[in-house]
Image (tube, rainbow, N blue to C red; front, top):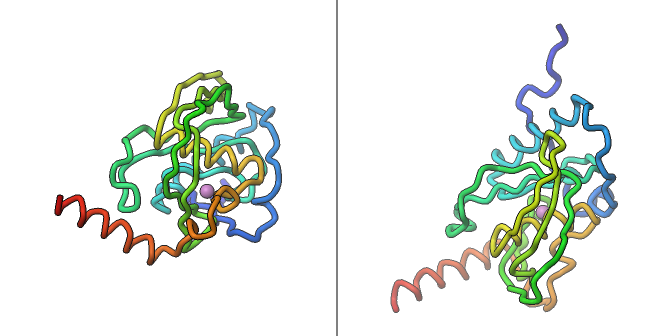
Length: 189
Ligand code: NI
C-alpha cells in the first residue's frame, strides 16, 4: 500500500500574481478519472479549513472547470444562507437578471483585500454534479454572488477586476471597521 501524499486533503491556495489565476480553465471530460474525485474532496476540505464560502479548482493550481459553492454564515458573512457544500463541474450561466447588486467580496487568493462588486441578483445556471449528472438551478442574492465569483475564476477573472471605483477596494482592517459601524448603527436605530 502506498502512503497518501496528502493526508490532510488540503491544498495550497494560489495567490494573486500566480499565472494560474489568469488562465482559462479546461472543461472536464474525464469523468471516470479517480483523481477528479480526489480533487473534489480536497477542494471541499480546503474551503472548509480556510473558512471560505467557495473555491475554484484554479485556486489550487488545477486548470479545470470545477468549483465548490458552500454558503454558510461566517464572521465575514453573518447573514449567508446555509447550504450543503456543492461541487459544480463545467458550470454555465444560462441567463441573468438585469438587476445587479453591489456587495463586499473577498477571495482566498487575495489576502487582506475587500471590494464592492456588482453582480446579477438572480441567475439561471446549469452544471454537472460530481457524478456527471446535469443539474439546473436558479440562484439569487448571496449564493448567486458566490457562483458568479467562482465562475469568474474559471475565466481567469479575479474580483478586484470588477471593482468599479478605486475607493471600493479596501483593506481587511478597514472592512472590519465598516461592518462594526454598520452593526452599531443598526443597533442604535
Ligand atoms: Ni475567489
